[in-house]
Image 1 (tube, rainbow, N blue to C red):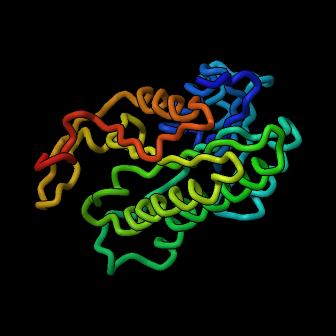
Image 2 (image 1 turned 120 degrees about the vertical axis):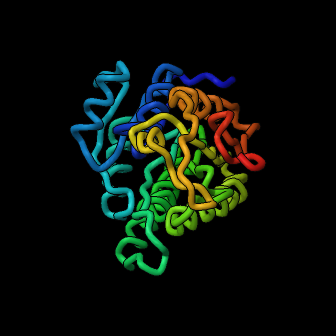
Length: 253
């Protein structure tokens, strides 16, 4: 594994859940970590919870779906740390679980902006920095989700954006080769977070029934992200699936 001393990682959607777990793992792995999300208070509390401080962590409020806010975020990273070595595009959201024909354009675009445009804008800004810095290069990790492979019922906006993330991942991996920039995707199924709490009461299945689904410890996801982040530049995990072992995804569930 490559040394992480003084390396800088940015985690989007870092205030809770998977993002917070990834920030914790990266911090414990030796990275200086920038945590971003829409709620500065949650980011500050997250830094306290993972054992960070003003020297090794930075909280910066940002809506990654807005170009001007992403630009401010990366200007601050340049100012504070002078480089970026890892970007974990984790920020995302879903739309109400209603039939696709009942979704409003605003509901659709809210998901597209957060999940897809946010990943594009942050990747674009990170690539600019990675190409210009010395030593050149870095790594981008995209949160694709199990929905990058198979949808849940009534999840068209979320599923469409996560399938698009796969294309974005492969394009970055290809275009980044000449600049020592790697890109991989982690597809996560049923991590135990605030978002998956409703699964304890049962979640809709393809046949219309509701079923309680197994969950896994979210810290296992954080460790998987760290594993991808610590690889030397000549190696890349293009695609990783980490999931609760008994969740209904493989086979008939």
